[in-house]
Amino acid sequence: MQNIGYYNGKTGPIEEITVPMNDRACYFGDGVYDATCALNHVPMHFEDHLNRIYRSAKMIGIEIPMEKEEMRRTLQNLVDQVESDSTMLYWQVTRGVGMRGHDFSSVQGAPSVWAFVKPVQMRDPYGSYRCITVEDKRYYFCNIKTINLLPAVLANEEARLAGCDEAIFHRGDRVTECSHSNVHMIRNGVLYTAPCDELILPGITRKHILAICERVGVPVLEKPFTVSEMMDADEVFFSSSSALTSRVTEIDGKPVGGRDEATFARIRDAYQEEMKRECGL
Image (cartoon, one colour):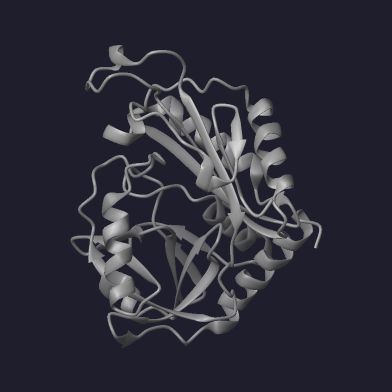
């Protein structure tokens, strides 16, 4: 198949899968999701992503109607059916179906499980990327991977219209994360990344980058940093399952970084090697 969609046990081409109008995703964005890329039909960091969606669901009171191993098998089966060696695997769980009402008592039956797999072109890890900064006006549930993504969608569109690749959020002067990735900086050979509080999503790629830094001898500080500190950093990059480690060379039309490519390259290259080993490449 060229792509595949899934909704509560029904599968088919994405364009042919339908969902009930009364699924709470439609009215409230009442659900959680996760996503990763699959290379050579191997979902990257699959265990971490599975753990995160169960953790996210628990934080908003959704009991996923599949044991983790069943979900793993179901998602892997979808990945295996798509005829591409580079795909995006996306899945979400919503509270379920029921007449529109804010309270949960309107839900009838079990939570709903959605998924799709489609070919994807991953970012070039050796490229350079442009960003803008955007005031972070989101709520305080950023650590939960919910499907409420309107602020991120608007910020990403603002970046696109500016001819940029990503939008970097900040609350006041504190940098938080990007519209769909985490952001990091390197200063004096040290990797700085925002702490995992309610203002950022604990990214899976971020987690593996920190482990890599420990292995290759790059010190890490998980502490807030400011927009002005980022603009004066030796290097800036963002990370996600599809962005991998993407080096930033311009923010708000001004050049940034370019002073410690060697440290960034150690992190990038080690991550590339880890990814290739995991996916059998």
